[in-house]
Length: 382
Image (cartoon, rainbow, N blue to C red; front, side, top):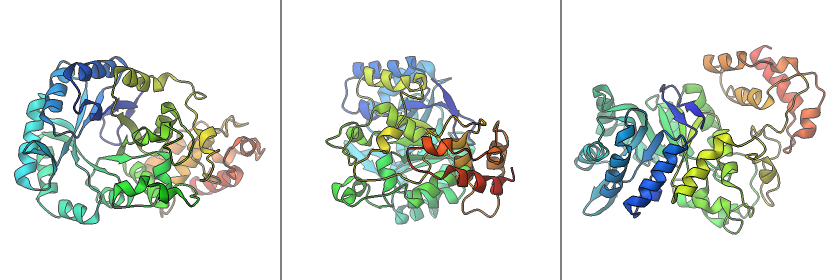
């Protein structure tokens, strides 16, 4: 397992991590098997949005022995009322639900306190202009949460939230199908078949701006919905009408700017074990480009998606990384210092391009790489 820094938090989280969905309505022994497989595979991070008391109790018991080296991202606003889940912004629900979460998890604090499920502008306004964000800041000041995050499926709302400067972590739904779709307040709309009837081309600009803004501002992205609820793994159910493999979905998500970890709601120990193997796979095994280059209806043509097929470069330039850093400078008056520093540390730079064209022959998406190297040289100066 490999580990990545989660934005500027200082937390080093496993590339693939544990979600809680597989624990809902599952017997304790199954949750135990899944959790032990995840830990054995090197996972060190849990995202728990579940309000169900038995799920919280199970993870509290199972992770207590690992409390010094297993990090938890817990959701505030996910409550349990009269025997059922309630998403609430009311203090009378949120505060006791948070206290219950800490108690059942047997923890003194959460590594990340996540504002739960914010998909509309009105909801974000209520949170950011009311008691909720003040409460989150107080919890952080008291050490009851170490970092403030927010979960969302709507890139427009998420971008607004990131630009406030109050978030350190974003839990966001990322996969190649979602990335083609424009922002929608109703998350279910993203997956409706009629929204894939007409050909779609390339990543939606708002989603692209969200990823690059997170990277430039040190906001770490934790990815959810990487498999589209499993639909991307089945040609019959996928909007692409082709089946991807789990490792392709993971690799796509983890090559987005700012992405640090993908959480999965594994329903068996074997699923958790297979996901944990991602870091050990070869580049060829997790290569998603052949699938996305052959989607029957939709297209990623002309846009670098950081797949790495352009390699090897004749002079050793890491073209995908240069393109990623260059994309992070778009729509900015000056190059962000962190991006400038990451670019400087590359072994070879865009200015070394000899325009041999082999990378363009290799690229399955028809990217005009030579021109992109020239543009990057102009931006960075070498």
